[in-house]
Length: 196
Image 1 (cartoon, rainbow, N blue to C red):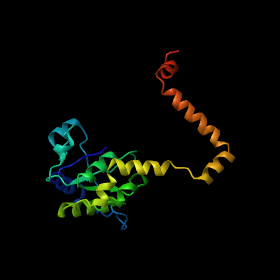
Image 2: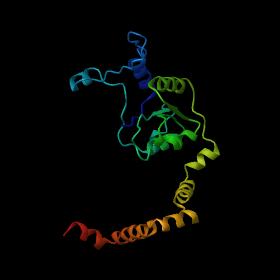
Image 3: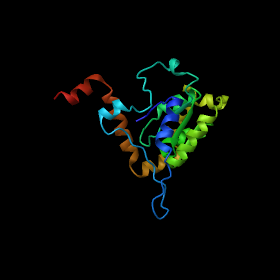
Image 4: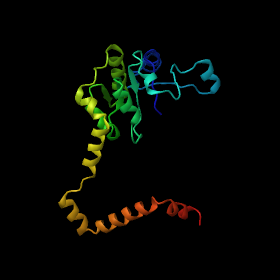
């Protein structure tokens, strides 16, 4: 789950979550990270998590200078659109170092972490500093033109790759897939697949 958390809420969460970050277990083992979420709805009502979930809001309304941090702990989100939006809005984005997040590591305001301890350090840094305004190069990366260029680049097939695919018989498979996709785009064909 992704949460856009107000800075004051982050401070409270840090106090709750990371104040006892390094509870050493006997024998000097690794730090034990502790966060005790509410165990019931009753407990949640009595002691709510200090976070604000605004629901559906227009992006223009979110460009609020009092919110400068976006924490995205996800390692399974496919598109990471929310991280891109937060960076484009000039926020700090704190996320785990993971293949799904590699694209974002090129941005100045992206603060990536490996461990919960590093996450706490990145949160502390973000709370004490202001995000750097996007450079013209970083701003261009978020345009449709740049996205189209990346799409074209990733879909290009070199002559050698085309010969290799032909030698392995993959070109016929590609042609069949392309035909099926083109045919399935026709309204009658799609309906025919499901209403027989």
